[in-house]
Length: 334
Image (cartoon, rainbow, N blue to C red; front, side):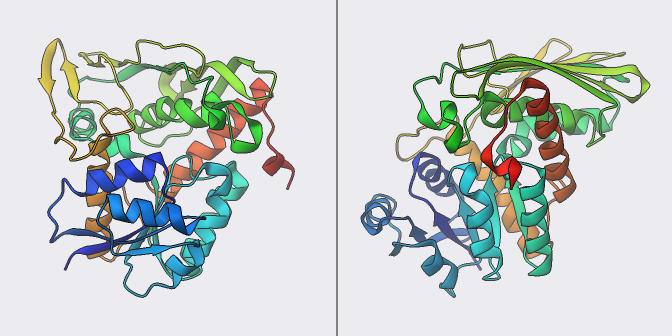
């Protein structure tokens, strides 16, 4: 039986997700319905992606009995409300990252998923790329000895994008691009909470962070440092340095297709899209979709690769970094 997907939101990221699903066998993945706040947007999306049902509200999608799991591609200030629409309707959920605006909201989403006994995962797509799977394998096998340093950066000139610069849209580099560096660090250090965090950054007039540098110290004198920016393009690479060797991602660290392990290069090419993509390497979303299918087939309520504990740790670290940089959202006072 195919996993039957509903897509919530007809925006740019949902487009890429639908394109990515088409690179997987149709007997494994089918998009059954799409919902948007305006019916005409859903209908246009449905036509473009050959989806049979289009809804003008999220509630209608939640009531559709033929949906196994819903992909939520709305912007993050709406994640809490939207997740609850589907978890309370007993639907499994793959929700875009960041899972919510802060720790309090993340806890509410996770509690709702548990209460309704449904699967829920934050769509940290990077962790499911074959290159990321290989990184975890190498680390598990101790190929690098003891990891002492993790360094990463993600910067893009995004000051023209309203959702990145406007506070009410959940703007800021930490929640948009910094989360990739943060999740990478947490993946390498196996979900361990750092002993200390120091964050310095600059904010825009709108009150959201534009560029932030974060230093994290873990147990046994292991370190991590990352830079994120929505103002400038950075090389966007990452390095994991251990006592016996290193792993480098030369570029596109959030959607890696190339690894250098102790100087030896390996490529992990992605399938070609059947429609133009909005995001670099967008067909790489296929891997998180397949993870969801495998979890559902096994009757799991969370993935071991991006667990509920992982999402909670990310939210806690994001909150602390924002606190140090001085970024406060309206959701923080609720």
